[in-house]
Amino acid sequence: MPRIKVFDTTLRDGEQSPGVNLNKMEKLEIAKQLERLGVDVMEAGFPAASEGDFQAVKLIADTIKDVSVTALARTRKADIDRAYEALKNTAHPRIHVFLATSPIHMQYKLKMTPEQVASQSVDMVTYAKERFEEVEWSAEDATRSDWAFLAEVIEQVIDAGATVINLPDTVGFTMPDEYGRMFKYMKENVPNIDRADLSCHCHNDLGMAAANTMAAIENGATQIEGTINGIGERAGNVALEEVAVALKIRSDHYGYDTGLKLDEIKRSSDLVAKLTGMYVQANKAIIGRNAYAHESGIHQDGVLKNSETYEIITPELVGVSSNTLFMGKHSGRHAFKDKVGEFGIEMSEEALTAAFKSFKALTDHKKEVTDDDIYTLIMEVKTDQ
Ligand code: KIV
Ligand code: ZN
Image 1 (cartoon, helix red, strand yellow):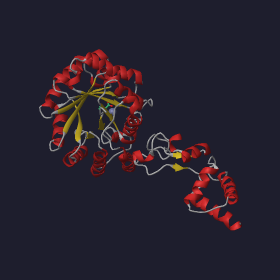
Image 2: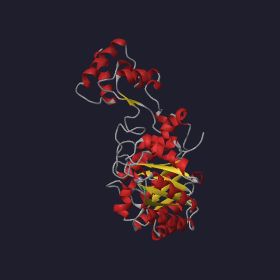
Image 3: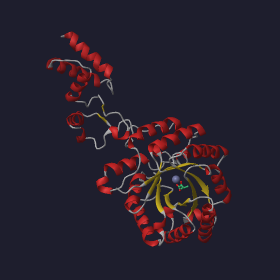
Image 4: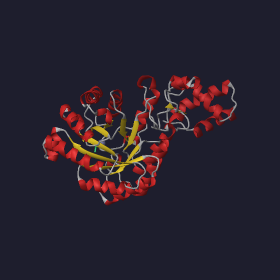
């Protein structure tokens, strides 16, 4: 099955989440876990941004052996030199340079003409190429850029040596069909496009990041960029675990896979949540606390008969030890009986009926009935008999 490369930016775009500030040892711990997870590239930081970020990128670059380590740089010689200093000892270095191409960014933020943006991109990719074999160029705010202009710049930066072209949806503005058409357009209108990997980078402002990423894959993207747990600026980046598991579960539909060790997902998610302090919502796809929990009686009964009735992903696939039957007011007799079996307690049908009745009465007062609660009420019924 053809493979989509995974570029993780938890340590750069993810760390740009408001309130998140990782020290270099915390970043290294996450980097080692990303290596175990099997990402192809990890973006360790933005060395020109601060001395602390430079030191963190250098430490990661010097330590990580099996994954390509990259760092962000503006299209400026000083930024590229700083990134080079941080990355020069790493096993598989890559530089990631970016410049905005949308009219609003060029006019108001950069105060540059489109021609200046094109020539600065070419000049700085050329400069970067003298130091790095692998050069990624990103068109910041690509999704609000003019496609014909973008196609011209892409052709020029590939000629200058770019090996990866990234088209970020910087402000999470695009829609799946539109983003897909943009990738198709570049494939059809940039003559040398096959000399580079084409990468997608989606933000989640309108909740479309995963759908947009899937659309890019269907239309020629060969690399996806995102973060663990979807952390990142504003509403965050695409959650890599969502895309990787969607590709796996729907391989019949997409026919692509990533090289990720999916059973390292939960460990990666827990570590990132703990170190960033950004806790994962309970109903988050793939790794939320409730993602493999069933409460209603009908669902619990189905899962007990055959878990595939209500589970399209086995918890073990992503490193979660098992599914859980949440014992609450919607739980049915079948799940209750199963719970009694877990305690290794033998009960007559009559005793079970009485215990189930007490359990239901308890659920009117308690949202979640714990194992201890159930054990106590079973024992009460047993001693009454
Ligand atoms: O969202 C974005 O445009 C970025 C670039 C710097 C690649 O993160
Ligand atoms: Zn971004």
